[in-house]
Amino acid sequence: MQIVNRSRKNSVALETTLLIHGVPSNSSRSLAHELAGIVDAQGAHPVLVGVVDGKPTIGMTDDELDALIDAPSVPKANTGNLGVYLKRKSHAATTVSTTMELAHAAGVRVFATGGLGGVHSGYGENWDVSADLMAFTQFPVAVVTSGVKSILDVVSTREALETLGIPVVGFRTDSFPAFYLPESAAGVDARFDDADELADYVRFELARTSRGIVVANPIPQEHALDPVQWDEWLTLAKDRAEQEHARGRAWTPAVLGAVHEFSGGATLRANIGLVKSNTTLAGMLAARL
Ligand code: PSU
Ligand code: MN
Image (cartoon, rainbow, N blue to C red; front, side, top):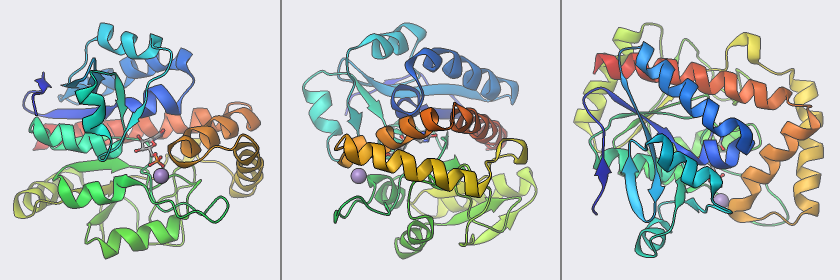
């Protein structure tokens, strides 16, 4: 695979699906700049990952990001359909799975996102498990994430990670975080309180295996949502997504968009708060590798 690789030592990958499908388009550009600034401030190098005119790009320029933002519709690339978008010379936003694939192809070992995809708690009778989980068995990249999105079945997702043999370590937490909520009923394999110690482990584990690592970083307390309030918004949002017949890859963006609306922007602020915190930790890690 031919890639455009603008990464260098100590790079941190950032993904385009979060920017293009996870937040309203008028905040994509400013969020991208803020995240890049956060990585820089940690002494690491930010690389935005996406597909531009069929070119897998690790380190997108502002113009390239603008091209995706301004495109009428940009597909979400997972491990399975990525090759189709490359062959057809289309733009595509990379999810956690394809950002890991491209980061690895460029030699980038650290990636910051908001929340992983995982096991869905269901719409209708459908079985829906994100390609993000399998990607950890294929690409040795440490992904800093606030656990998995609270719109999923968090405990089943944690079990699925264990089944796949993927290490899940917590930064200053014993609990597997649930995106907008700092804790869930599930736990982590180990807790690290010190960034140096965490970086030593990440270096060791990535060299030892060809698998990725989930670095679980809970949403900062000041951004966390009230669980009861969250449940109300989630119920409304799922009903809305059902009414819109959102299915498959459209489900996550539809539910996220609806909770942002029902919460009057509170979930969006929380989402941005947790992504920034994950980006800070990813920058700290990359600077230490
Ligand atoms: N983190 C966020 N917002 C997002 C995502 C992550 O804060 O929108 C994206 C990631 O790209 C992840 C995707 O891979 O959501 C999961 O989509 P799905 O459930 O369809 O696999
Ligand atoms: Mn899916």
